[in-house]
Amino acid sequence: MKKLAICVILLSSLLSCNDTEKENDSQNENSNKMEAYQPQEYVKLEHPEWSKNASIYQINTRQFSEEGTFKAAQTQLPRLKKLGVDIIWLMPIHAIGEKNRKGTLGSPYAVKDYYSVNPEFGTLQDLKNFVSEAHKLKMYVIIDWVANHTAWDNVLVEEHPEWYQKDYKGDYMPTPWWDWSDIIDLDFDQPEVRQYMTEAMKYWVKEADIDGYRCDAAGFVPIEFWNNARQELDQIKPVFMLAEWESRDMHAEAFDMTYAWSWNEAVHQICKGEADVNKLYVYYSWNEKFFPENSIRMTFTSNHDKNAWEGTMFEQFGDGLEAAIALSVVGEGMPLIYNGQEAGNEKRLQFFEKDAIKWKAHPIGDLYKNLIALMKENTALWHAKWGSRMIKVPNNDESDVLSFVRQNENDKVFAVFNFSDNPKSVEFKEELYHGTYKEFNTKETVMLNTTTILELAPWSYKVYIK
Picture 1 (cartoon, helix red, strand yellow):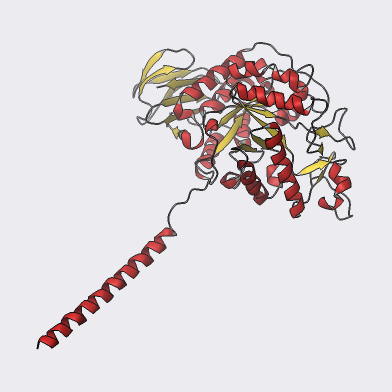
Picture 2: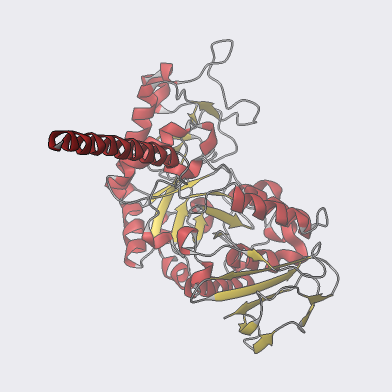
């Protein structure tokens, strides 16, 4: 009987072990299955820490000073620092092609040699000095990079004609469907082209100590090229990359920031009476749901393309200009200043000729300076993972009035914009905006609650800071 009892115990133990193993297997299988459903971080790259509350400033070197040189631009760096600028974006620094050139001086985006400095702007040493001085002032320098195409007489045309795309006739071809007759497209299906371009980009980080790139027509170049280039550049030093494009995939592994073209278009159409604030709701919906959370969009009221081909900031935004500028800073996005905006530049700067900016003090400069100072101080207004989302505050006139809160544990901003040519008495719903604030323009302390009615003049705005 003893033997029988022992056998029963052993059998029971064995069956119990089998049940436990089955249970463990089932749990492991469940766990493995659940891994497939876990949220993934879309943005794999690391933004440089210094970009968290940065502003960006574009220099068109040719027009930035009477001399049109790096040396002359360098003398203005302390002024830009006082303005609140963190990132300097230099338009292409390279020698410009002569064959099929547009205008007298040509387009900086028709590059003759990726390893050259345009003698119009100075020497390699002048560029290095500019970058070094910017770094001393705790500013960062990115340069324009034109990967998609070159000038007709780029050095590669002689050295590697096989690296270019050809049309159906076998001829070199400009980018299809555009009037870019002064350039021809490279063929990024060829590994050698990708290697050459990556090495050239690495050269300027190593040689001139630049801090990254603004990449022209970035979407016309395969994304895997940019992804790899970012990895190789980051091995030299952490860089900041801006894509002239508007697409989610750019943010995953290659670019810290993309253009908010559709933000600019929406605000422009609203200010010109061609749309109402619903156009902005569409933009911000896409920005929040389609673009990854830890990404940066560049918001702007002007740049070299807009100014030269579509109109000055005054032409583009009219009476709504100051409200548009304020929204570009306190809304989500990194604000861009195109050189001359802070001086109230009223002319379309010529693109292929010398056309120097006339520098003077202007209220727009003070506005940018004060707004950027607010952005730097108020952590809710920071960028990417460091900042806070905009939360819509419902109001009684939502087709004309935009109202939102950005807040975190330490800081809060409540902003209201009247994007119409009529005065508005604005009431708000819900309680998110309640509290005691200081108003940005008047510096007055106010309490906002359920009974609050704000009186807004046409095209005016209020920003309340807590």
